[in-house]
Length: 206
Image (cartoon, rainbow, N blue to C red; front, top):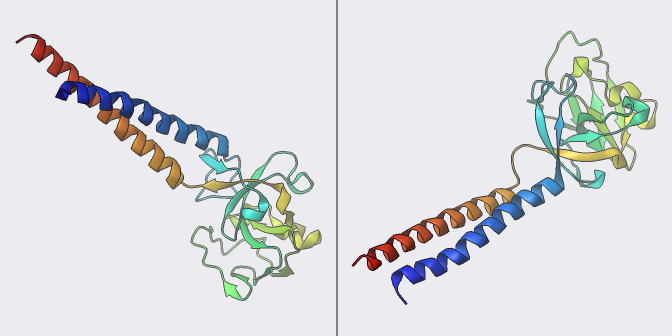
């Protein structure tokens, strides 16, 4: 088999395989994620109003403390879904002196929280999150309508079943790997096809 023929054969394998990986990775991402636009200021500065985000479709049982989730809780926020950060899950003991938040006795490190020493809503609370519920806080505590406003309703906990998804910062590693490998294979295959064509033309001109 000549070099040109080997290159054409490799190209016929690499290009389709590369395209399958790219399209498959992108397609899987679109099926498992949804795009949302941040509507309010309760999650600034990390997520300012108007920012576009990707939300991974997961159930409430999959989220953990620190996750930013998209939830629909009509009794608290009306019909529109909102973004909130999970401070505690079912069984957690969440306490605040009005500024610092502790979960099960551990002080949360919250570099994302917008600190406002004049926050009028900075009231102490001490709750045990009911099972199947999530204690949710906004990052801009002075402007966030969150679990602190509903302490008389299941200790402020929103149903875990209300979770529509979890915010993902960046593409999943699997999507990045599939698309990157696919792009390399496609580019390599096209390069081999071009090389094979040039070799064939050179051989024909001899």
